Image 1 (cartoon, one colour):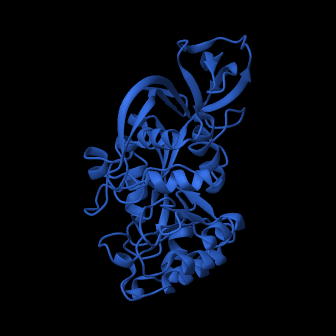
Image 2: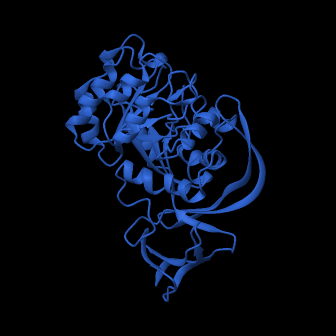
Image 3: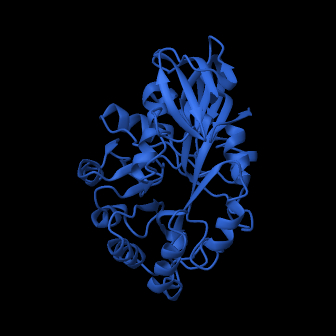
Length: 368
């Protein structure tokens, strides 16, 4: 007998099936599962099912004061089964974060900030004595199942007078660990976005890809995507949304889409203040903003499941297949007139709203 059978399931594109789950894993996906479950969940006709949503850019180390939140507040309660904390902590405090994160229902991973204390202050990369290769190496080796990549924040308020050097150091650290992903935060210059992109390689993640700043991807005079941004995109640099308080602009995202440039992954850059006061609120709201821009729900679901799992080598997540973790998001799409606001105060009205109904993590069901 299976632990859980999910019946009357269907994906956003209408494929119908049933799921069998045991020991926290998906063990069977079939049109009809004959075996019974200790527990059976029969979905309503208006419910859809997808692999568990992954938000690959959050800030959820609760002991910080600048950017912080609680994993389950941005995770399981919002239909998100897995979060990746994007560099809140560095080598000196990631151990404590790992211990706290282990108490959450939500799956939690971390990108290690190359500055040893993480984002204790806004300018963590202004003093390069805080960037220590030995400390980075020790942390990665001590927490290999928790640390899934590195994070370097490359914008004016963070780097001080350090220029492009922090990114060079991050790339040096990355080279020591082969396929370890690197996420790079971009914002106001210096450094220039063109210089940042020139140092990044295929598979590196550029977060805040559609920000509305002058140092972003949009040439404001010509109202077209800058040539060097296209070069980076075609090179294979991963464009991640990273909405945040100040880093998503409807017009930039719309212009990029009109030229054929799409994000690879959708993330919220959520923390307690922009969760409670907006404009982020949760990952679902960020997903709705990309739908308003012109992305299909099929594309959007892929960008919060399969894509982030691939980008950060989460090998047992992101798919509905035997052997994968039983992390699942059940949701509905309803008609709406919800007003959405980007980071620059521009609004759009969503005609459809995506609403998480239940979240399954490791085979355990949680109501939303």
